[in-house]
Structure formats: structure tokens, C-alpha cells
Amino acid sequence: MPIAVDIDVMLARRKMSVGELADRVGITPANLAVLKNGRAKAVRFATLAALCEVLACQPGDLLRWEAEAEAEADAEAADTAVE
Image (cartoon, rainbow, N blue to C red; front, top):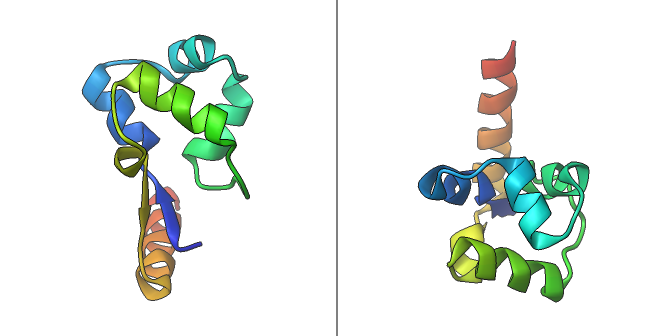
């Protein structure tokens, strides 16, 4: 998918856990993990706004577009790193 999600970057910058962010935003840790790992098909603006409020950031800090070839290369690199 050409939309990359950088929630993990913001979590690291804020020294916050996934569980803490999920609690403060009001979503389940499982749903946050789906979003964080780029497996979500959609995100509600209310959820995006809550994430931005808690993380004190802009939507562009959490989401970015990358060309399809770059996205595939990143996915392949991640798969290789896991093996």
C-alpha cells in the first residue's frame, strides 16, 4: 500500500508505549497495532485527530505517501529482516 504509517516513530519520540497510546486515544491495542503495522484499510478522522492530539503532532507526521515500488521494497526488506 502506498500510504505508510509512522506511528511507531512518534511513539519512540514521545517515549510512549502502544498500550498507553491506545488507552489515551480510546481504541484497543489490537486496533492500534493494525493501524501501526499498515494493515488498516481505513482510519476515521476522529481517531486520527485523537492520535494527533495525544502525540502533539500533525496528520502528516503519522501518514505519508510513498511510490508503489518503494512500498514493495520496504515490505520485502521487512520480510527479509524477520527471517
